[in-house]
Image (cartoon, rainbow over all chains, first blue to last red; front, side):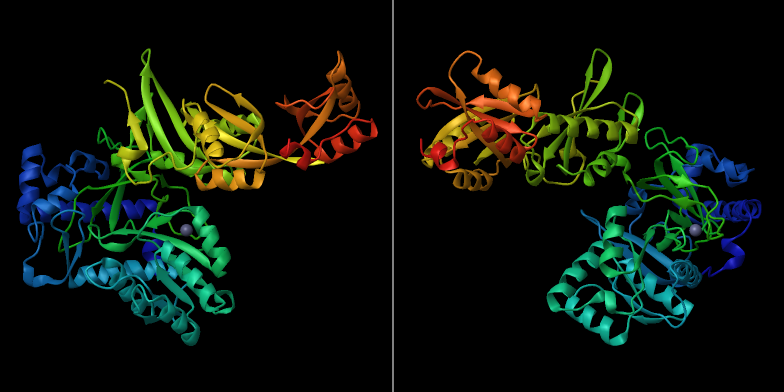
Length: 433
Length: 143
Ligand SMILES: [Zn+2]
């Protein structure tokens, strides 16, 4: 189902003309009303009228998360505070949260985006949506809630947690759709099994999952266990919240970005250069319709690929892939951008090894070398050398196919690689550059 | 007829081999035969011990990567051409030897060799039909 046929299937030419008009007016607004942008544009020697075509956007400076923090709490607002009807904040791991505000029109826009998102998942009037995203300062709960009301679904604002109550209401109310994080969907299934609920026999037919990275393997697992369609959504509070990108249930292959509200670019995180669509890069968004806190070229740090092939659902919007990693994690090996998550993707469905790895990058005679340490999996352990060697070669080939760089795989004992997130533990770069 | 062999994944790191044998020794497990196959990166230690189940459990509990495989202990005539005779019999029946190694102790006039085949059950049939003696598990564990 397409919620807004007119905009979601706008021919590219008309769409780009619309983007240009909206962008031009946005640049004028922020230059006039946000001191941060005035100072930044002046510093770069650029003015709103320098935008002659859409591609001139790349002459304008980026906005970083740190800029939002530096202007805490309301310094980035482009409207007087009395026009702000809602304030959300994302929890920072350290220090102050990142604050975002919404005007009444921003709330309408956001509801529209979530209405598109839910419609694309096949949810509509008559459906009962159990919204298990957290309500509160986090944008997930209220974002999905407003979208669900807009399309006329009956929304259960149950928020996250309390799995037994979730299951009871799901059964008693005849829930037909759920929105939550994918990992919560899996944990809910475990509780259902313990409590004797048979989710497959319930009327639920679709789940809208997001707010954390997940794999297609996880999608398959959820779909098989729940007996539903599982679609992916993308959003971040700085841009608007959930609803920035959404999958259509017809294709389930990448998330459509509502380009009448956002301009998306992929850039090389090191040089800041705009990359052609189809190459993995850092996602950068410009919010061309937002009023309270519009952002110019906001650096998400999320790495993904943009696909501009037409989609079978009929939408003309480009599709973004699942987030493949964070730009902070990027390595450059023999001139190729490599993300540890790509290696993980190879290992995660390989029998015989665990998806725990350590990348060692070195430089030998002016040539970068990559060694991947991988833990063998106890239950698949073979007593034959040739079996382990075959496994090693197979992983080496799959990694080469994935990243285009030759590597050496070294099998190590289970639990010998530290279990923690982040680049520091995943990568040892011995190169003296 | 089949004998349980314990195999342990060993990173090429000095001391690891000692840890395995030390752990077994401390728990009164006797090693009857052993072979280490290694590449430049890793090795696989194969062991025949007096209490395979206990050894397997113990190694797992101590977080070694450990596997169990069925092998055969074949009495090989202790004379020139003895081993060649066994291998010839197997080769005629197209049974592949993945690897083999010798048992530490000898029994009377025969050497005992541990064999790992691609098809262990068929190897039992072929060898017994050709008159070769296979050691039973208890015989090996209790030497
Ligand atoms: Zn589509």
